[in-house]
Length: 386
Image 1 (cartoon, rainbow, N blue to C red):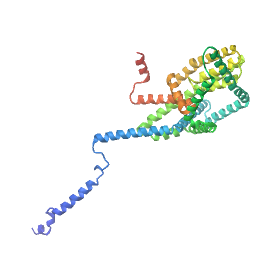
Image 2 (image 1 turned 90 degrees about the horizontal axis):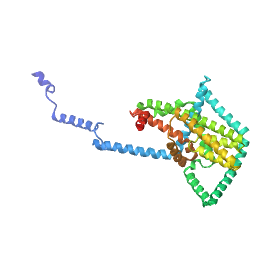
Image 3 (image 1 turned 180 degrees about the vertical axis):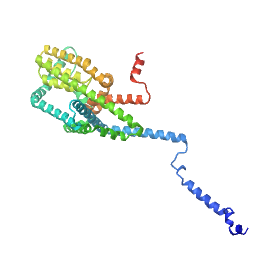
Image 4 (image 1 turned 60 degrees about the vertical axis):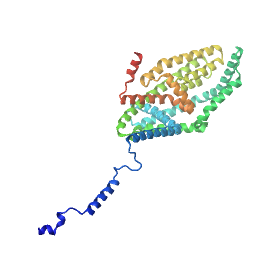
């Protein structure tokens, strides 16, 4: 009993005022707890879900606006990727023959390109330059002869109206493509594409991994596989383009030179360069060729038509199916629509890069459909034909 009297605190509960102090501290700790909703938190789950959806849409609109603002720069970067794929394809072909380092193979491809340009300017430059100076006068004279022929057959066509329409069309395009206006802008754009392509071709894995690191961890493996598929398809697409340009250019030059058509070397070069533009390049080069042929005689004009048809058959039945079988089979209407849109928005650069861009987008969509459990393309094609 005396022991209990000496130590009453061991057997009696805490006083009421102490219990109140502990409760206040616990209440303050609960109010400061991070699990408690703050004034900026949304307690209602439905409102919180709708707010997240709204933020996603706002972010998509912001990204779209940023893409439109940076569209010219993004197109130049994509041009560098295309040029890098072209260099990489040449380096891989050399690697099958010579087991040397990648840097040496890339240097060999660049050196071969420079030597070809030097040869073209040294041995054929003077002839092509002289023919290029004569070509505008020939086209203009044939244009006036065509208008006179139409007027003789009852069609009222005035030269002033045609020129005004052409000037308005070119003026509307030039306003949108101001980035490429002038010689300095075109050379700057070409220089940036070349520099970006060389850097990317030297170490493609470095830049591919850099883009992959910006993605979530669970999507990096899929991105790596998709990038490899895109790179392989782009290399084969460009290889087919180079083969087509070489075959069509040499064939045109030989056929025209054999018959004595003037400006044969220049017409072959124009045909080779415009062969890079599917659906559009062949009609333009063919029209120039036919106009030059008819400027001499009707027989030569008919012969140039025959040459153009023969080139078109070679391109349609040999080169294009080979490219489609090795890379991506693109519908002609889709490519033409992309070329029209890209040509109006970005000028010649957009026109040249429309075909590779559509091919890469199609591969990405097919890979995403396969990743999400979609039907393969061959099954969908069988369903459409059934």
